[in-house]
Image (cartoon, rainbow, N blue to C red; front, side):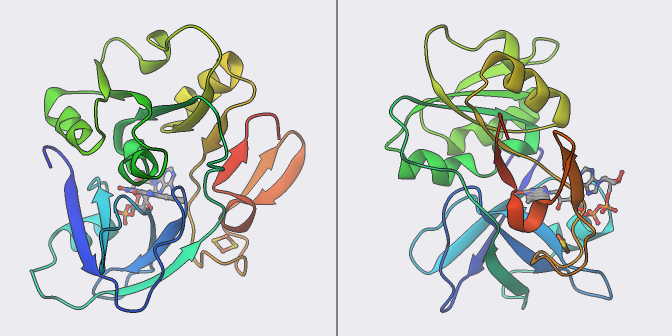
Amino acid sequence: MGAYTLLRVERGGLEPGIPGQFFMLSPPGRLLPRPMSVCLAPPGELAFLLEVVGPGTRALAALDSGAELAVFGPLGNGFRLDVGRPLLVGGGVGIAPFPYASEALGGPRAVLGFRSAAHAEAAALVPQAEVVLEPTYVTECLPGGEWDVLACGPEPMLERVRALAPTAQLAWEAPMACGYGGCYGCVVEVEGRLKRLCVDGPVLEAAA
Ligand SMILES: Cc1cc2nc3c(=O)[nH]c(=O)nc-3n(C[C@H](O)[C@H](O)[C@H](O)COP(=O)(O)OP(=O)(O)OC[C@H]3O[C@@H](n4cnc5c(N)ncnc54)[C@H](O)[C@@H]3O)c2cc1C
Ligand code: FES
């Protein structure tokens, strides 16, 4: 998928969960599992959009067809889908939950930002997405009016969305070792309170 890898997994008896939830994927070798958002959930399958940034994603992206993979989930809190005028706002591999979210919401408006045309090829997974390429930032191209924003992307993008749309739902990232609340590796401070992002998030209300 352009600069990213779309990893398709047979899901056996696993439920796909709701958009914004994630699975822990155990790369082969002695690596800890890595959290990945559900990107698509066609019957019998789960698909994940990966950006290779280190050993875990490199090993996952290099899996041969038919290889076995340990997958655990769905985990965390996904996006609330009871919204009237949804607008998907994504940056980079942060668009990963939006193909599934777009399907669940009936193809809402989506504005997705990428750092190159090769990365932007992934926008084809989100119907009718408007693509913004750097040096323009996606937050400079949001439509006017009142929207129920669902956002996922790098932290500076989420902070900008929070400032522009105080009712937005934001999907955050933190390094995660367990994914179910046991290790406290994913603790983040939100408005002066500590939260385990894997169980309290990854989706948080902007006003939280
Ligand atoms: C809920 C959730 C959903 C995610 N969904 C996806 C997804 O759909 N697709 C995808 O490609 N990635 C996703 N990620 C991020 C992915 O899990 C991490 O980038 C992963 O740790 C990469 O593993 P690695 O071994 O390849 O790289 P690592 O060696 O773990 O890290 C490589 C570099 O990335 C930085 N880094 C690692 N993890 C994070 C993090 N979580 N936040 C910020 N910086 C980090 C490290 O500091 C280092 O510079 C998600 C993360 C979370 C928390
Ligand atoms: S990843 Fe272990 S507590 Fe959140």
